[in-house]
Length: 551
Image (cartoon, rainbow, N blue to C red; front, side):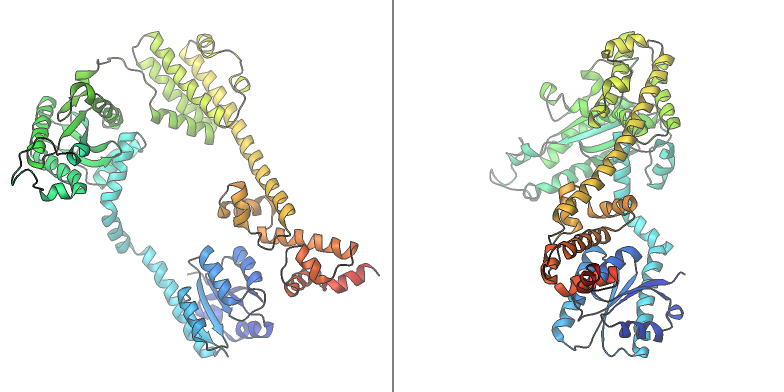
């Protein structure tokens, strides 16, 4: 196993060097990757060196150990912290406990005691890693998470967001027994909770008009009771899976040789009546088109949701089969939300080969579907509309992207052959991909330029932090820090320090201001800390620098 990385923080160099020299770090499983003489210095080194453990003194100038611990806990919660102090102070220990400090050590540091503590810290780190890698624990965690994972996957499946290439494997893994059927139906159950709250329908009163059954008093249990009732009534008739989706209680029903679609619909009607009788609550069931390929269950689900939309017309408390309320289309050519998502993802992330594959898949359906030319044109317009929305989102020039200022219908009539349309679509998509990449690069450069300008405008503020700046540029501090270092080669703190010191040098050369005044003008509240940072950068104090520069 690789060595754990540790940083030592103490304002006395002799103490730091002494501890580093006396301990056999490698034999204990550690590597000292750096040391710092105060909290400010330590924070910058922690960002650069990413230690597993920070060992710090409490009493230090500029930023004490407890403040450093608090900052570490906010930004790096997994880092282990060891505090050593010459002050046997109960309040310090209390604060250290609140900050979840791993160990509290009193000075002078004893080699044997510190060795024992480091052994404990290493064992603790080893145990944490072992637990995360422990197969049996992971398997147990997976088993306990299985119901949640199953619900998430089934939701993705009906909404068209699941990877259908692994459909069979996933359903077996999640113990969903619906494979191998002749066809499948998606069903969405809508529980009339509002009706339950306002009188609970026309169910008979058991103990008088003011009686309240336990279920009436626990309304949140109603959907659970409805779900259980459906499970109990369907389990001997067909194979199915039931789960909660955004549309309501949802089921995928398998139609096998041993049952029939008509029988299922009749049974669902009976369950509606039984729900009303037993639970005194009304439920309406939307039943979608059947599908002979399970990968297309998303279309059945959407049509089940559509069927529920007819409640106001056909009434509630019964099954509504989509075929009964909408005409059946035998040659349907429709751009689904999943198709749009795949096209958008291909354009955004590329590469060209992926764009070509997605476009060929979508345009290939035009040859398979036996539909009127007008329906093909609507389908083509759907793809163009999808791309137009993306162009507007990224503020791309439509004429440049399409290669023409013509309107949609002129574009479609100019590329009537499917192969020509596919080739044109790939060409436009690739232009968009290149333009979006360029826009992304430009946006990154602009963010960094804006950040640099913000630092130039606010370097005098002693509270200027990466969090404060990120609120202005609407970006997360973690992502910004990574981006800033990648673009500039410096950490945010290092760049801010450089800007402040450059202005300090200018003031030293052009004014007679005292050092403490210059410190405040460039964002340092403490003159001593300013002098420390200045000397660290230039090798001399501000006063000596001014004297040397003026001869």
